[in-house]
Image (cartoon, rainbow, N blue to C red):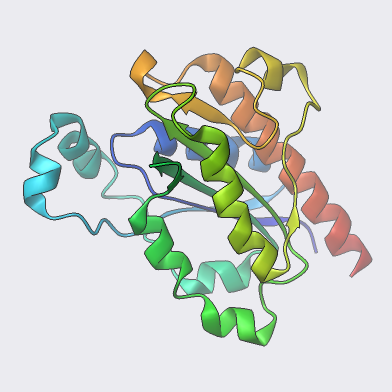
Length: 200
């Protein structure tokens, strides 16, 4: 059995969506089966409509399949992404993660490699703390955290975040450097998953 990677994310204006696609591409190139899934949007229409970029992304991403607990059961590795909300993960992603208690009790989430990615408005807007907050969930799941570290020049070129790929959204669209780092992160996760699957 090879790597089966669930890339699960929430994105409001599209930056985390772009990173998620790149993580999925990297995992696929490394030989993994991949499910790219978004969590449901919970914000009211009034909030979404107050930001044209938010409404535009909601419409653009409506064909991306919605994440389910079955996706987590199927996978033997997780890449999870969220924008930063006050240095923490977005409520939409947190709500989905909060539904995993049954799988956690069964031990179905344990011993699987996991990694995270994020985007804040600026470079010091909580990127690192958001990833560390996400990794708290991975600790409780019993996951094996596979951060990118400084394992490839792509990490340095994208700003040097060893906790996970991040993008300062206020600077504009996701850069090719950040996408390359995300692809590296996805490939690294897939390689770890394949190694663990081979020893199971």
